[in-house]
Image (cartoon, rainbow, N blue to C red; front, top):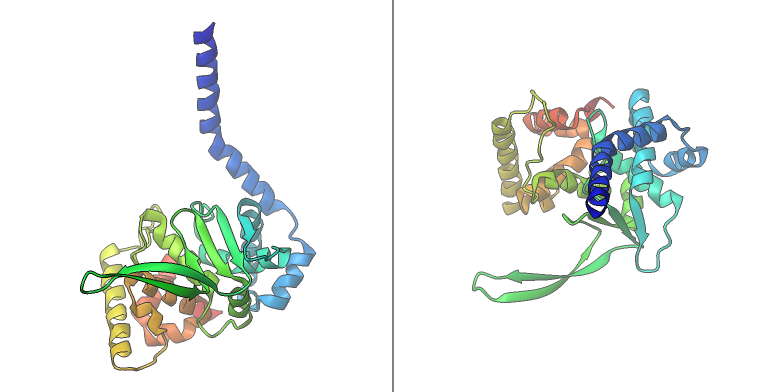
Length: 275
């Protein structure tokens, strides 16, 4: 009797695991087929002007992705902040820009989005050249964790959305990190989509390292070009910074870094220079 019960439970577990992908696909299709709430449309019109620049087909796709994203992610208010639909919609709209035209699992590693009213302070431990451990406190607008969380300042999120042509967008930045972290620690080389014959890892590496070296040279000489010097810290930050510029100042990036723009265009499957 005990053996029979054990086998039955094991069989149910196996069936559940095998059926989960089908159930998830059915649920997502149902969410995408639903009507986009009028109140959400109003929030987009008021706070995310970049959406209006998208071709109509991409606007529709973005809204469908947002419906899945908002349903699947847990938004948590921190520092006394109460999460509202406005926050969910503004964050989702910017995050979902990164998955347009791509086979997506909706940032599967992201379980929670923590939202602070404004910049938040974190403690950092580093080791200097002499091997001495240093403790410091940093004020951040956003952070991406590999444990399944993205942390955002609502003030910076709202400001980043409101000005859609300055190449500074904390949501795009942090979710670009999440894409980069899909195959481990972020290192500026996010994994390509399965079966993406256009992606050449060697070409990606050569183009990105050349552009990264150029930004580092600008920083050393005190030259402020198109890209923020923050991206010169390491390849992971470089990828996140150029992703911000790609979506918000695509035409300028295409002119200043044509090879880099083509790599990002191939990876993200969109062409913001034409928006």
